[in-house]
Amino acid sequence: MYQKTTNAITVSVSPMYLDDQSSPEEEHYVWAYHVCIHNNSAEPVKLHNRYWRITDSFGRIQEIHGIGVVGEQPVIPPGCAFEYTSGTPLDAPSGIMVGSYGMLNAHGDAFNIEIPPFSLDSPYQPMSIQ
Image (tube, rainbow, N blue to C red; front, side, top):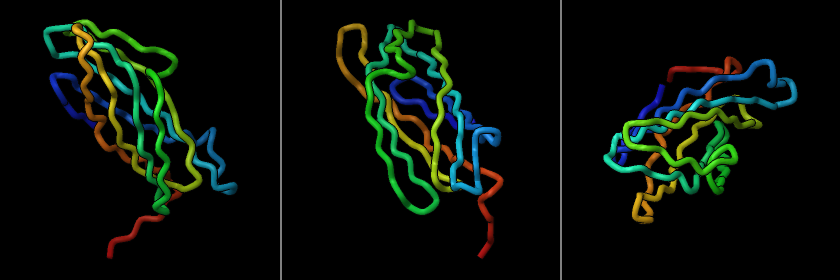
């Protein structure tokens, strides 16, 4: 699990390689990732938008911007968490994802929280020590 706390909001991410949805012979690799956003602050926060930067093992970069996550813009009360699972395909056997969530506090002020970098590893990525 990967974890990062920003402005009293903790984001935890657990990636999982999906062998049954991947086709290595066609250079198609798929991962799911489970995210838990825990509000450790004293006020409710709303997840307004998301930003992802995905870099595959060949150095290709995809950037994704969007409103909310999985079709929702959840309000997370103090001491509570919001969890969701999503996924991403790559044309490479590994990669790294990192990003941020745009949040709004109870007064409507915007702030960003960081999503920790996490690796997308498949059993098809050759490993070598040099």
